[in-house]
Length: 153
Image 1 (tube, rainbow, N blue to C red):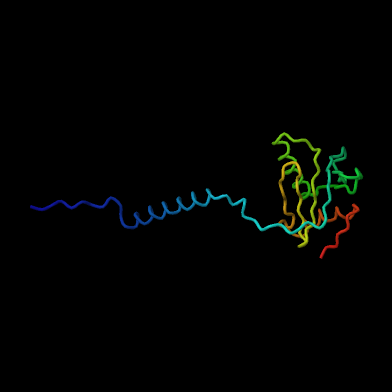
Image 2 (cartoon, one colour):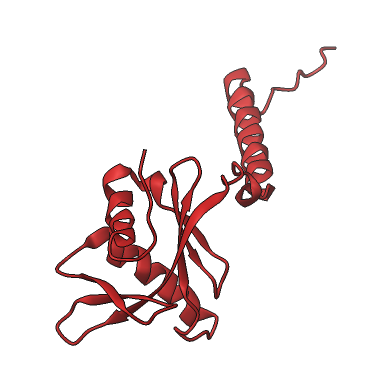
């Protein structure tokens, strides 16, 4: 009498593919469960801080106003995509949280030469240097119209 042999349901290749798929799914779950927002290099000490308000004008420009003096220090004309995009993102965050436009933004020049734009209302920080030197320089020039003196290395 012969004993019937059971056939493997999956071939060896299919078993490897299924095992690989399970490992990938578990890896993705592990990676997504980690809070990577806390992983960042500590910021260098601020050497200069400029408190700013940004106001839309009827002609489509954006007035840049020194929050302390109320004096307009610059005007952003035309497309200025990076500046407008950065400000739009910060303004939308304020709107989502139900905050008004009263609290100033802080443009921070750090000891290591980096620039950070901080929203004092939400606590959100934008490291402007991470978008490249030409984009950061569009914000750096705002120090020129103010009384805050910064020498860029």
